[in-house]
Amino acid sequence: MSMFSLPLLALAFASTARAEEPSAEVPAVTTVSTVDLTTDAVAQDEEDPAEEDSPEDSVKSERDSVKKGAPADAAPSLPGEDDKRRRIIKTIQKKNFMKIHRYEVGPSVGFVANDPFLNRYIIGGVFDYHLTEVFAAELQVGYAPILGQGGENDPDWKDLSKQLLLENSVSPDISKLTAHGSMALAFSPIYGKAAVGRSIIAFDIFGYFGLGVTATTDDLVALQNDDDSAVLTQNQVHPTTIVGGGARVAFSEGVAARVEGKSMSYIETVNSTTLEMKNNFVVQASVSFFFPGMK
Image (cartoon, rainbow, N blue to C red; front, side, top):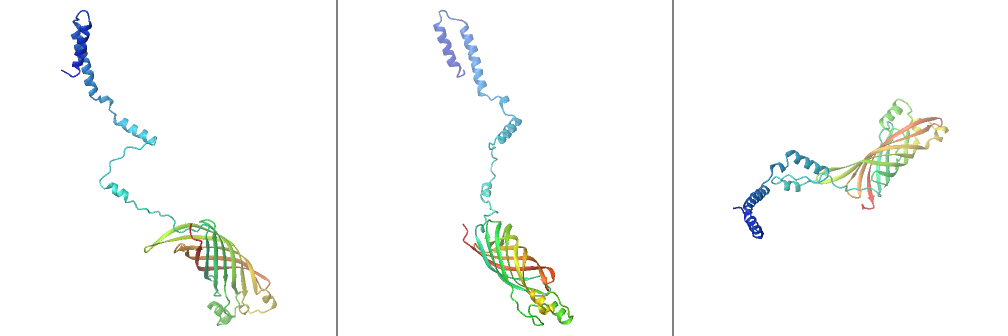
């Protein structure tokens, strides 16, 4: 007999005792009720195959969960997978050299690379204030000493000048750059790092453009002219446009090296009568010191 039948039989006997006459239908009712309720109990214990989620419903519910931002059930981790996830190597490191709101000062040495007649060696200095990591206000100055007074033994003359003057009696227009100064806006759009041995060196690529002045001295021996007109314009100062660029390599928080080239263009007066466009391309290197320290 089922465990549900005992309570039902007790309920049937109690109903019979309260009645005035015994009813013959009680056992039938009891039997029917017992069978029906027992069947319901069995139906509740069994799982209805129709109520199980179909594959389509499972996929749909998972898709709805993803759309709502709910996390999907994670797939079981493979053996050793957690250890692999913990061994993540960071390939992007934070920037370890900053220029913003810092001063950059340093000496420089250079030479005029495109003058076919003269050797011009320049010593000078560079001063920058970095407004941001990208932009800076820059001041450069340079001085090129005159090492000779013309002739075969003049260290300022190149071989071409000696050949033209001494062998061919040709007078090239030679003017010596003696000093320059410029103010420019510099920008550093490219920043990177390089591994050198066990060290990481930061570098950036920069460019600048601005205005300045250039002082020149005509070589009267090369011009073979010492008239008053030539003497009058022997020493000149020219407004100059500056365009340049280069690379900066930072060895530490406060020390860097720069290699750059700049084009200096100006108009020069020759013999007080002729205007001539000149361009000097200067290649220079410098050591930079940054202060104050990085914040």
